[in-house]
Length: 105
Image 1 (cartoon, rainbow, N blue to C red):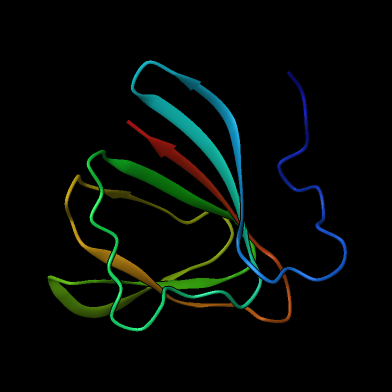
Image 2 (cartoon, helix red, strand yellow):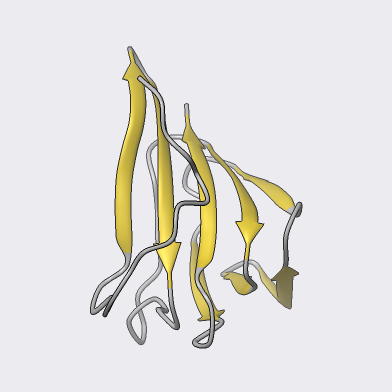
């Protein structure tokens, strides 16, 4: 399997685009493309697995339920989110695609 993680998404992007790159056992790798997408009001991710996520292109802001600060992310930034650490996407750049690489394990 081959591809390009930075391949542009043409046209409208009414919903965040999630593409599974590969999965094996309890490990899953996804490419996520956001264009101004955020978590719905009041929604918090509360995942069963750890998630390591990196921003490859664009900009984003994450918020964690246990921390009042916002985590600003740009190209090259990454974070490990422990299982059940509630978090949400507060902002992604509406003017350009934010490309994430997410590894769930």
